[in-house]
Image 1 (tube, rainbow over the protein chains, first blue to last red):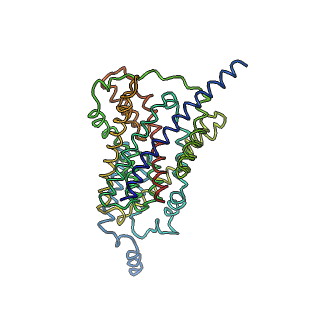
Image 2: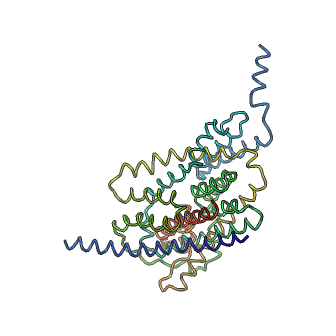
Image 3: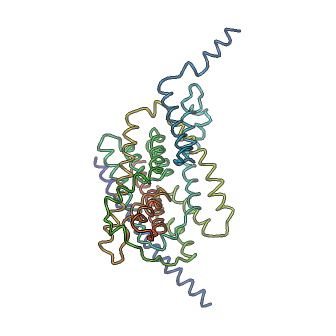
Length: 43
Length: 372
């Protein structure tokens, strides 16, 4: 039972942490892409 | 001469037909009927149905370990983890992440739907299934066929057939299962919420995503690597725009070929002795339970997010967090359209829908991390 509880808690937590990291990754990559594109536009 | 004919008859399968085999033939025929007449996931249910019939023809040895033709498909394709990742390669080549990148907050709805996976896991374990079996049953709630097969092959191979059929059957029934839950958990006012116009997503962002996602997810959950790596590689093919041949091959020829082997192998694991057990009925019940809970948890998470946001999300989008691409997104659009014909939710629903695929793979990876 202890293992099942651990999996339950870490599972839900792990999925949300994974998605939160992806969310941050998307926001950062959007900024990087914007800068690269504006730099390219200036050139 | 008469003796020879008698000997042939004795060595034929006719004398070995049992009631269990006949029941399995019937199940196989029902799946073929559903695939052809009702168009229920025909690409999978048709070969699965035929595979069930083949596996239950006596004396054929098609699934005989080490020798049988279909056993080889199953062993090298599924047990060796080849087919599910190749399906993911094709899915990656087919997937457009633009709706997700345009509304990144919707990614959390893909996580919300995975709560159902873990609730089902916990319930199944509490009701007497082994921990590996419970994990395999729980993942059905993710509504992702290849992930269910991938996990079942590793954790509970004896449940592979029944879990795969349950997953694909319920995926086909998403338009029946989800709407009542979505309506029950939302008010008319909430269903009428119009989403803010999505921002423009550049090609560079779309190109960055598969690379970034590969790093983030595989570093976090290494056990998810076989599926995520192929999924993102397929998407990189697509977004790079320089390997059109590889993109086309991944999403068409390769995916079609592996689907044939996947379907027939899954069907062939469903022998009478494996399938005709009371556990199979429980698994079908739990599969439905998992789908319902996943839908509900996605919708409820969207409502929770709305408590903290000025710009509200239509909570119906939460139901698209179960993978079932693009069926769940279409259902969201349809339910929204019933309230307001001008409320076009499909593009927005594709965001949590593709996030749900990633979420289910992460959930499967976490199970493997603990249980493999």
